[in-house]
Amino acid sequence: MVNKQTSLLIVDDNIDNLRSLAAILKLEGYKVRKAISGKVALETVRSHPPDLILLDIKMPQMDGYTVCSILKQDTTTGSIPIIFLSALNETADKLKAFAVGGVDYITKPFQAPEVVARVENQLRLQRLSQQLVVQNSQLIQEIQIRQQTEAALHQAVEQAEAANRTKSPRAIEIAAKQTKSAYAD
Image (cartoon, one colour):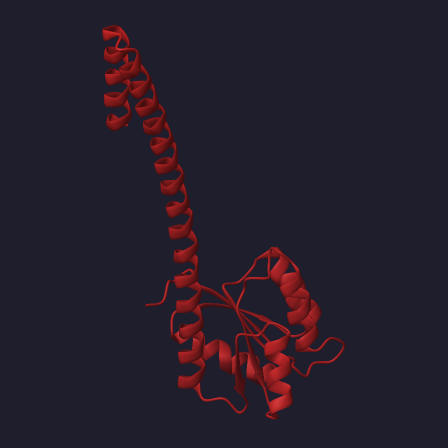
């Protein structure tokens, strides 16, 4: 289930990798942008944040670890999932990628079905996470409304009990109306 507006950014200093990945992902219906360096990637992300980034590690001037760290420290870009895509296949390299904020790691040479599956998986996780944020917000609002209703009901009950103790028919009538009003809310 690809949303035609889903935007991906591929960052790699190898033109052939950029073209190949872009072709694979465009066939799947994604809107793909490309960046040839870490500096260009940062500018691109800040001007038009993508939904997901595929990021090479070994690039001149600024490596992928640095790019990821910078993006994760920024509140406007910190939630963008980053999948590292690298020929580095040592465990230490992968662990460092996760430590700086990467959500997944694909080793080059990559296989198209694997890239597509991992991209779709991360986008699905991102959508589910966003849904949880919305649902939590709604639950918090519902809890606040219930707390206000319970406080009003508690106050009405106290007033009714006070009126009952005084045995004033008028006070009992007012308290009864307030109790009905609290239940109606």
